[in-house]
Length: 297
Ligand SMILES: [Fe+2]
Ligand SMILES: [Fe+2]
Ligand SMILES: [Fe+2]
Image (cartoon, rainbow, N blue to C red; front, side, top):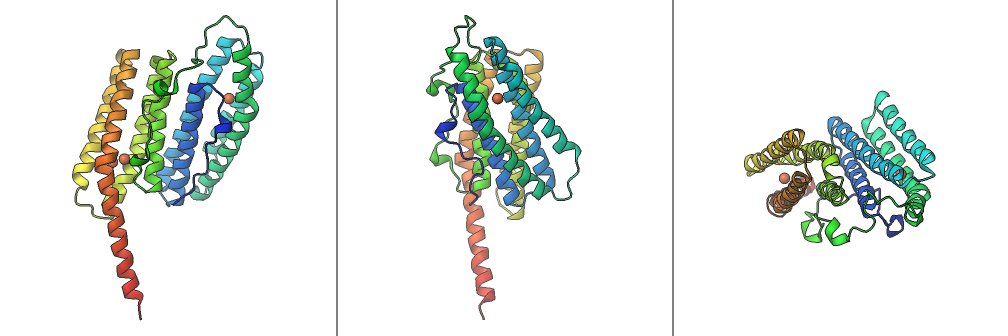
Protein backbone atom coordinates (compact mmCIF):
# COMPACT_ATOMS: atom_id res chain seq x y z
CA UNK A 1 0.00 0.00 0.00
CA UNK A 2 1.29 3.43 -0.87
CA UNK A 3 0.68 6.22 1.61
CA UNK A 4 -0.65 9.28 -0.19
CA UNK A 5 2.06 11.90 -0.46
CA UNK A 6 -0.40 14.79 -0.58
CA UNK A 7 -2.78 14.29 2.32
CA UNK A 8 -5.76 16.60 2.25
CA UNK A 9 -6.61 18.25 5.58
CA UNK A 10 -9.58 20.34 6.65
CA UNK A 11 -7.23 23.20 7.53
CA UNK A 12 -6.37 23.63 3.81
CA UNK A 13 -9.93 24.65 2.99
CA UNK A 14 -10.38 28.18 1.72
CA UNK A 15 -14.17 28.11 2.02
CA UNK A 16 -14.65 28.49 -1.71
CA UNK A 17 -16.07 25.24 -3.05
CA UNK A 18 -14.66 25.41 -6.55
CA UNK A 19 -11.17 26.38 -5.40
CA UNK A 20 -11.20 23.71 -2.69
CA UNK A 21 -12.29 21.02 -5.13
CA UNK A 22 -9.63 21.99 -7.60
CA UNK A 23 -6.99 21.89 -4.85
CA UNK A 24 -8.18 18.43 -3.85
CA UNK A 25 -8.06 17.30 -7.46
CA UNK A 26 -4.46 18.44 -7.74
CA UNK A 27 -3.61 16.59 -4.52
CA UNK A 28 -5.30 13.55 -5.91
CA UNK A 29 -3.40 13.67 -9.21
CA UNK A 30 -0.11 14.07 -7.29
CA UNK A 31 -1.02 10.96 -5.29
CA UNK A 32 -1.77 9.06 -8.47
CA UNK A 33 1.60 10.16 -9.86
CA UNK A 34 3.34 9.11 -6.67
CA UNK A 35 1.76 5.68 -6.50
CA UNK A 36 2.55 5.16 -10.19
CA UNK A 37 6.20 5.88 -9.37
CA UNK A 38 6.22 3.55 -6.40
CA UNK A 39 4.53 0.84 -8.49
CA UNK A 40 7.40 1.18 -10.99
CA UNK A 41 5.28 2.35 -13.93
CA UNK A 42 7.05 3.12 -17.19
CA UNK A 43 8.62 6.41 -18.21
CA UNK A 44 5.86 7.23 -20.75
CA UNK A 45 3.16 6.92 -18.17
CA UNK A 46 5.05 9.01 -15.64
CA UNK A 47 5.70 11.74 -18.18
CA UNK A 48 2.04 11.82 -19.15
CA UNK A 49 0.97 11.98 -15.52
CA UNK A 50 3.36 14.86 -14.84
CA UNK A 51 1.75 16.61 -17.81
CA UNK A 52 -1.73 16.10 -16.46
CA UNK A 53 -0.65 17.53 -13.10
CA UNK A 54 0.69 20.54 -15.00
CA UNK A 55 -2.45 20.92 -17.13
CA UNK A 56 -4.70 20.69 -14.16
CA UNK A 57 -2.67 23.15 -12.11
CA UNK A 58 -2.79 25.59 -15.02
CA UNK A 59 -6.58 25.30 -15.28
CA UNK A 60 -6.74 25.94 -11.57
CA UNK A 61 -4.50 29.03 -11.71
CA UNK A 62 -6.62 30.45 -14.54
CA UNK A 63 -9.72 29.97 -12.39
CA UNK A 64 -8.20 31.77 -9.43
CA UNK A 65 -6.79 34.58 -11.55
CA UNK A 66 -10.09 35.25 -13.23
CA UNK A 67 -11.77 35.26 -9.82
CA UNK A 68 -9.24 37.78 -8.46
CA UNK A 69 -9.72 40.05 -11.48
CA UNK A 70 -13.49 39.92 -11.16
CA UNK A 71 -13.23 40.74 -7.49
CA UNK A 72 -10.75 43.56 -8.05
CA UNK A 73 -8.40 41.88 -5.55
CA UNK A 74 -5.60 44.23 -4.50
CA UNK A 75 -3.06 41.43 -4.16
CA UNK A 76 -3.67 40.17 -7.71
CA UNK A 77 -0.26 41.01 -9.20
CA UNK A 78 1.65 39.45 -6.35
CA UNK A 79 -0.48 36.32 -6.31
CA UNK A 80 -0.24 35.93 -10.07
CA UNK A 81 3.55 36.28 -9.88
CA UNK A 82 3.61 33.24 -7.61
CA UNK A 83 1.48 31.26 -10.05
CA UNK A 84 3.75 32.36 -12.89
CA UNK A 85 6.80 31.17 -10.96
CA UNK A 86 5.28 27.70 -10.69
CA UNK A 87 4.28 27.74 -14.38
CA UNK A 88 7.93 28.54 -15.19
CA UNK A 89 9.06 25.72 -12.93
CA UNK A 90 6.91 23.28 -14.90
CA UNK A 91 8.51 24.47 -18.13
CA UNK A 92 11.93 23.99 -16.55
CA UNK A 93 10.98 20.46 -15.51
CA UNK A 94 10.11 19.74 -19.10
CA UNK A 95 13.11 21.22 -20.85
CA UNK A 96 15.67 19.47 -18.70
CA UNK A 97 16.41 15.88 -19.46
CA UNK A 98 16.35 13.40 -16.63
CA UNK A 99 18.43 10.27 -16.64
CA UNK A 100 16.26 8.77 -13.93
CA UNK A 101 12.56 9.41 -14.47
CA UNK A 102 11.54 7.68 -11.21
CA UNK A 103 13.82 9.93 -9.21
CA UNK A 104 12.58 12.95 -11.13
CA UNK A 105 8.95 12.06 -10.49
CA UNK A 106 9.53 11.67 -6.77
CA UNK A 107 11.18 15.08 -6.75
CA UNK A 108 8.26 16.64 -8.68
CA UNK A 109 5.65 15.10 -6.36
CA UNK A 110 7.42 16.31 -3.23
CA UNK A 111 8.15 19.74 -4.63
CA UNK A 112 4.54 20.26 -5.73
CA UNK A 113 3.03 19.02 -2.50
CA UNK A 114 5.16 21.37 -0.41
CA UNK A 115 4.56 24.26 -2.80
CA UNK A 116 0.81 23.73 -2.85
CA UNK A 117 0.36 23.43 0.90
CA UNK A 118 2.37 26.61 1.48
CA UNK A 119 0.61 28.49 -1.29
CA UNK A 120 -2.86 27.45 -0.13
CA UNK A 121 -2.18 28.45 3.45
CA UNK A 122 -0.21 31.64 2.79
CA UNK A 123 -1.85 33.00 -0.33
CA UNK A 124 -5.10 31.32 -1.37
CA UNK A 125 -6.77 31.44 2.02
CA UNK A 126 -5.80 35.11 2.41
CA UNK A 127 -7.07 35.91 -1.07
CA UNK A 128 -10.42 34.15 -0.69
CA UNK A 129 -11.00 35.71 2.74
CA UNK A 130 -10.16 39.20 1.41
CA UNK A 131 -12.40 38.81 -1.64
CA UNK A 132 -15.30 37.60 0.47
CA UNK A 133 -15.07 40.43 2.97
CA UNK A 134 -14.59 43.16 0.35
CA UNK A 135 -17.69 45.14 -0.50
CA UNK A 136 -17.18 44.70 -4.25
CA UNK A 137 -20.56 44.85 -5.96
CA UNK A 138 -19.32 42.35 -8.58
CA UNK A 139 -20.97 38.94 -8.34
CA UNK A 140 -18.57 36.20 -7.30
CA UNK A 141 -17.74 34.34 -10.46
CA UNK A 142 -16.46 31.45 -8.45
CA UNK A 143 -19.66 30.86 -6.51
CA UNK A 144 -19.36 31.85 -2.88
CA UNK A 145 -21.45 29.10 -1.43
CA UNK A 146 -22.25 26.30 -3.78
CA UNK A 147 -23.82 23.72 -1.44
CA UNK A 148 -21.49 20.76 -1.05
CA UNK A 149 -24.19 18.28 -2.03
CA UNK A 150 -24.73 20.09 -5.30
CA UNK A 151 -21.09 20.73 -5.98
CA UNK A 152 -20.00 17.12 -5.74
CA UNK A 153 -21.54 15.12 -8.51
CA UNK A 154 -19.07 12.26 -8.22
CA UNK A 155 -18.99 11.39 -4.54
CA UNK A 156 -16.29 8.95 -3.62
CA UNK A 157 -17.47 6.12 -1.39
CA UNK A 158 -15.43 3.47 0.41
CA UNK A 159 -17.32 0.79 -1.52
CA UNK A 160 -15.64 2.01 -4.73
CA UNK A 161 -12.26 1.05 -3.36
CA UNK A 162 -10.72 -1.89 -5.12
CA UNK A 163 -8.05 -2.12 -2.43
CA UNK A 164 -5.34 -1.54 -5.00
CA UNK A 165 -3.74 1.82 -4.21
CA UNK A 166 -2.53 2.76 -7.68
CA UNK A 167 -5.91 2.09 -9.27
CA UNK A 168 -7.86 3.68 -6.39
CA UNK A 169 -5.73 6.84 -6.58
CA UNK A 170 -6.35 7.09 -10.30
CA UNK A 171 -10.09 6.58 -9.86
CA UNK A 172 -10.19 9.24 -7.16
CA UNK A 173 -8.38 11.67 -9.46
CA UNK A 174 -10.96 11.04 -12.15
CA UNK A 175 -13.74 11.72 -9.66
CA UNK A 176 -12.07 14.95 -8.61
CA UNK A 177 -11.65 16.09 -12.19
CA UNK A 178 -15.36 15.48 -12.82
CA UNK A 179 -16.27 17.36 -9.63
CA UNK A 180 -14.12 20.29 -10.60
CA UNK A 181 -15.88 20.41 -13.96
CA UNK A 182 -19.24 20.19 -12.27
CA UNK A 183 -18.58 22.95 -9.80
CA UNK A 184 -17.28 25.09 -12.67
CA UNK A 185 -20.65 24.54 -14.36
CA UNK A 186 -22.50 25.60 -11.22
CA UNK A 187 -20.32 28.69 -11.02
CA UNK A 188 -21.21 29.53 -14.61
CA UNK A 189 -17.84 28.60 -16.05
CA UNK A 190 -18.69 25.15 -17.33
CA UNK A 191 -18.70 25.95 -21.03
CA UNK A 192 -15.43 27.78 -20.77
CA UNK A 193 -13.61 25.10 -18.78
CA UNK A 194 -15.22 22.17 -20.54
CA UNK A 195 -12.73 21.89 -23.38
CA UNK A 196 -9.73 21.83 -21.09
CA UNK A 197 -11.33 19.57 -18.55
CA UNK A 198 -12.28 17.17 -21.31
CA UNK A 199 -8.71 17.14 -22.62
CA UNK A 200 -7.42 16.43 -19.11
CA UNK A 201 -9.99 13.71 -18.65
CA UNK A 202 -9.03 12.29 -22.02
CA UNK A 203 -5.35 12.09 -21.17
CA UNK A 204 -6.10 10.97 -17.66
CA UNK A 205 -8.43 8.16 -18.66
CA UNK A 206 -5.86 7.10 -21.24
CA UNK A 207 -3.18 6.83 -18.55
CA UNK A 208 -5.53 5.02 -16.23
CA UNK A 209 -6.77 2.58 -18.84
CA UNK A 210 -3.19 1.86 -19.88
CA UNK A 211 -2.34 0.96 -16.28
CA UNK A 212 -5.28 -1.41 -16.03
CA UNK A 213 -4.68 -2.91 -19.45
CA UNK A 214 -1.05 -3.57 -18.58
CA UNK A 215 -2.13 -5.42 -15.43
CA UNK A 216 -4.60 -7.50 -17.38
CA UNK A 217 -2.02 -8.42 -20.01
CA UNK A 218 0.63 -9.34 -17.42
CA UNK A 219 -1.79 -11.61 -15.58
CA UNK A 220 -3.44 -13.10 -18.67
CA UNK A 221 -6.81 -11.95 -17.35
CA UNK A 222 -9.48 -13.99 -19.16
CA UNK A 223 -11.88 -11.02 -19.48
CA UNK A 224 -9.20 -8.64 -20.77
CA UNK A 225 -10.64 -8.29 -24.29
CA UNK A 226 -14.08 -7.40 -23.02
CA UNK A 227 -12.77 -4.98 -20.40
CA UNK A 228 -10.48 -3.28 -22.92
CA UNK A 229 -13.40 -2.91 -25.34
CA UNK A 230 -15.30 -1.01 -22.64
CA UNK A 231 -12.34 1.32 -22.16
CA UNK A 232 -12.16 1.88 -25.90
CA UNK A 233 -15.86 2.73 -26.03
CA UNK A 234 -15.43 5.32 -23.29
CA UNK A 235 -12.43 6.87 -25.04
CA UNK A 236 -14.51 7.20 -28.20
CA UNK A 237 -17.31 8.78 -26.22
CA UNK A 238 -14.92 11.35 -24.72
CA UNK A 239 -13.55 12.10 -28.21
CA UNK A 240 -17.13 12.60 -29.42
CA UNK A 241 -17.77 15.01 -26.53
CA UNK A 242 -14.63 16.94 -27.47
CA UNK A 243 -15.80 17.19 -31.08
CA UNK A 244 -19.27 18.28 -30.00
CA UNK A 245 -17.79 20.84 -27.65
CA UNK A 246 -15.67 22.30 -30.46
CA UNK A 247 -18.83 22.83 -32.52
CA UNK A 248 -21.40 23.87 -29.97
CA UNK A 249 -20.01 24.49 -26.51
CA UNK A 250 -22.74 24.89 -23.91
CA UNK A 251 -23.52 24.57 -20.25
CA UNK A 252 -25.99 21.83 -21.10
CA UNK A 253 -23.27 19.81 -22.80
CA UNK A 254 -20.97 20.31 -19.80
CA UNK A 255 -23.70 18.98 -17.52
CA UNK A 256 -24.36 16.03 -19.78
CA UNK A 257 -20.65 15.21 -19.83
CA UNK A 258 -20.22 15.30 -16.06
CA UNK A 259 -23.34 13.17 -15.48
CA UNK A 260 -22.40 10.65 -18.12
CA UNK A 261 -18.83 10.28 -16.87
CA UNK A 262 -19.90 9.88 -13.25
CA UNK A 263 -22.39 7.16 -14.05
CA UNK A 264 -20.02 5.37 -16.37
CA UNK A 265 -17.18 5.42 -13.86
CA UNK A 266 -19.25 4.22 -10.90
CA UNK A 267 -20.64 1.30 -12.87
CA UNK A 268 -17.33 0.41 -14.40
CA UNK A 269 -15.44 0.55 -11.09
CA UNK A 270 -17.97 -1.49 -9.17
CA UNK A 271 -18.39 -4.05 -11.84
CA UNK A 272 -15.48 -4.55 -14.26
CA UNK A 273 -12.62 -3.06 -12.26
CA UNK A 274 -13.53 -4.84 -9.06
CA UNK A 275 -13.64 -8.18 -10.87
CA UNK A 276 -10.28 -7.49 -12.46
CA UNK A 277 -8.67 -6.55 -9.13
CA UNK A 278 -10.13 -9.64 -7.42
CA UNK A 279 -8.54 -11.77 -10.12
CA UNK A 280 -5.27 -9.86 -9.81
CA UNK A 281 -5.09 -10.46 -6.07
CA UNK A 282 -6.02 -14.10 -6.38
CA UNK A 283 -3.31 -14.62 -9.01
CA UNK A 284 -0.72 -12.81 -6.90
CA UNK A 285 -1.62 -14.94 -3.88
CA UNK A 286 -1.27 -18.12 -5.94
CA UNK A 287 2.09 -16.94 -7.29
CA UNK A 288 3.30 -16.18 -3.78
CA UNK A 289 2.23 -19.60 -2.53
CA UNK A 290 4.03 -21.26 -5.44
CA UNK A 291 7.21 -19.25 -4.84
CA UNK A 292 7.10 -20.05 -1.12
CA UNK A 293 6.70 -23.76 -1.89
CA UNK A 294 9.56 -23.69 -4.42
CA UNK A 295 11.85 -21.97 -1.93
CA UNK A 296 11.19 -24.48 0.82
CA UNK A 297 14.16 -26.82 1.27
FE1 LIG B 1 -3.33 30.53 -5.91
FE1 LIG C 1 -11.31 -0.47 -16.18
FE1 LIG D 1 -10.83 1.84 -13.77
